[in-house]
Image 1 (cartoon, rainbow, N blue to C red):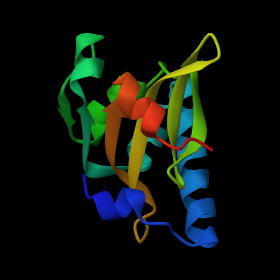
Image 2 (cartoon, rainbow, N blue to C red):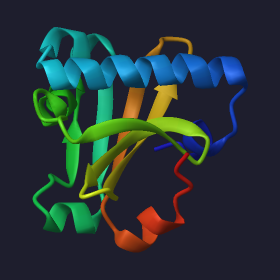
Image 3 (cartoon, rainbow, N blue to C red):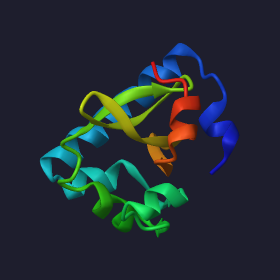
Length: 131
């Protein structure tokens, strides 16, 4: 994942566009709309999970839009859109606590998600600025 794509403070317009993409992605995931998920993902999208997420059952690396969409399709009922270090992403919440964060990288020209980093490590979650 390109750290600059994720961590650079984008302008307000980019934040709003990225939030709209993240919200559309989440709505499609919750609704089981596979075609919509695929349209919001780079065909070469990659999901990388940290070791804590893998311990919880996540796949370490998922390649391609179809694979990444399959991870989320119909399985996002406990997820919400949040700003993660100033960039829209997803959080999974249980009993009022963030238990997993999904950092999203965006291709602003194409208007889609190019990569997802799934983090379940408690220290990394605590260090992530969620807004």
